[in-house]
Image (tube, rainbow, N blue to C red):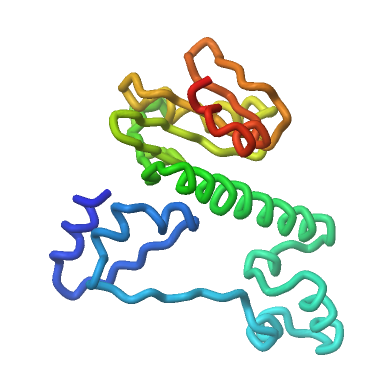
Length: 210
């Protein structure tokens, strides 16, 4: 990532905008590459004026909706209350669980934490294509390194496959871990990937060595 960013910043008349999760923006590569050569832009939820300009209709009804669900931009594309509530619930869980709870815990334990990218080769429509998959946390301390994926749940096969894909394609022998928001006891699958429940991860500082 560092080399890519450095190369882009050598281009003239080009503005680079880096967006993503809190954990990605805290990546050491990103912070190092842009130190002293960029400005931070804070993006906030929609104001009521911005919200109303899009939805229109009755002002009082629009305000009640805005006051209930807030101004996260994606909310305006959901038509039903259940969809909006599920979105907000998942948003809170994902941000707090991955970008705050886990990241802060790893930093507290003295690890250097970064975001990783793995190139994966797959077949699509009969053609071989390569794409990049993100690893949520690449954790280092001295000679130790862990690759960690964070997910609320991997009970569905598609979700499990998505989380496992980058771990299986790191092409090295450092430890691979999936942390899920469950009470599950640590266990290791047939690929040698360690599965840990969130509560065990937060309460047991030695769990990565399980």
